Length: 130
Image (tube, rainbow, N blue to C red; front, side, top):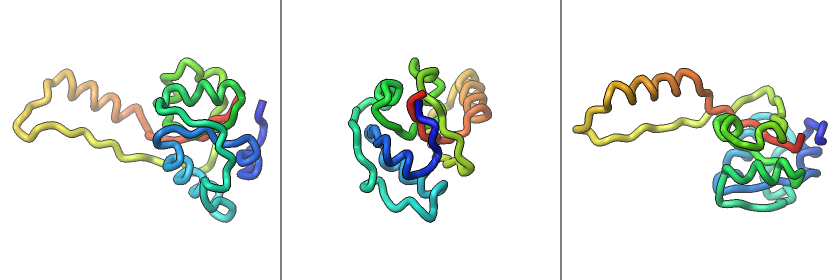
């Protein structure tokens, strides 16, 4: 039951990494702890997984914290076993939709993508054990 909010408290519980975890954590922690944060190399690394969907399992078990997108959190079966740490600065990530120049996207996909675009902020939040 992590109740902290400082960078040193996060450093104390350790980081659970995944394929893009270091990049996401660097961006979010640098924005929210500009005077304290230097690099993820100062954090104790508690584990690694190739699947971002599995990283929340380790966090739910109390092995450390991680940083994932809001979408990963909302679609995870472990979303109720972890806690999102509220930080003042959100970080957004640009997502690109690529398609062939000569292809036409069916209207049903345009509606779906527009709805997704309107709903989602690519916010990243550090996740800690509940």
